[in-house]
Length: 256
Ligand SMILES: Nc1ncnc2c1ncn2[C@@H]1O[C@H](COP(=O)(O)OP(=O)(O)OP(=O)(O)O)[C@@H](O)[C@H]1O
Ligand SMILES: [Mg+2]
Image (cartoon, rainbow, N blue to C red; front, side, top):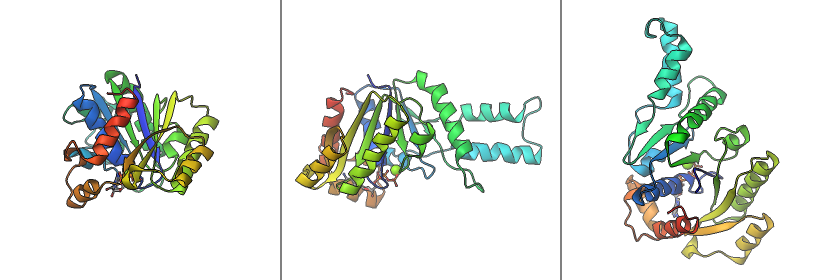
């Protein structure tokens, strides 16, 4: 139902953790093939999924620039643009039941415009080959305001258990409305809620921000334990609190 799913929210709220677990559930439930997109210049979605990344869009761009400067490595008869296209087409990393596209960063330039543009093109080009595209965004509104992720069918706004974080996703919602993005469904997930419960004060702020609460994921010591040991979160037992809560959310959204 929702082809393109994007996850956004304030820094450190759990976007990457939840995105990785969502991808894993979709695959487990036979909802693949999935294109997992790590749209964070400081990529780490692969760690939640437990895969190594060979290449990212930023480093391909660097490599092609370098090849041009040396004037050697670009194959004869190919323009720089053609060579870049060719290399980019090879950059999708294959995981277990999904493919992964990683933005990465370019060195020496403060601006990510160029690599953002490449990411946008690649997502557009590849999306049709997959049942779902699931995009983990960096903190804030950059990709949304620049339209990097293009049209989304479902935007999951992830907040932690604080009013400020709820307000931050409230601003993302307002921005997407101002930009007239026409996202069919935008829902709030409150992550790291003690005992999976929300206080009156948090509920009040959700109402103030006119957010559609689709679920709550509890503060889960298993996540901290796995992350502190560097074990991929997808390997947590199926009855782990956070996994159960997230699975319920995906069922509610009729994704699984
Ligand atoms: N439900 C949870 N219970 C306990 N800890 C959690 C939970 N969800 C995420 N965390 C912890 O919160 C931290 C941030 O998580 P994560 O990297 O997924 O957030 P993020 O929103 O992607 O961050 P960034 O904005 O830096 O990309 C991690 O240390 C993770 O272990
Ligand atoms: Mg992240």
